[in-house]
Amino acid sequence: MKVVKNDNVLVISGNDKGKKGKVLKVFPKTNRIIVEGVNFIHRHTRPTQKNPQGGIIEKEAPINASNVMVVCPKCDTPSRMGNKVLKDKKKVRVCRNCMEMLVTSD
Image (tube, rainbow, N blue to C red; front, side, top):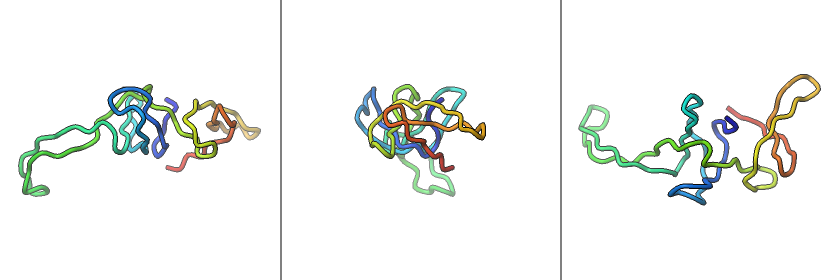
């Protein structure tokens, strides 16, 4: 999976096509991700101690990772990601457009 947490992504297909957002959570086993502000669902909840009112809550649902492209912070375009091995045997992600390294901040 070429998408990691805290990446900025652009949705390229589906009902939310064209929206940009930050990746909140990644599920590698099912190849799905949760993107901030994309794919909202309505969840009916009963009253609890944490939420005494209950009611209908809107929250983001997972979408398939193949429906998004990572936005490169340098060239600011959605682009494919590649891997590059540095001299010290460390593997980093690079933008296929500008060949700039993407720093992952967890």
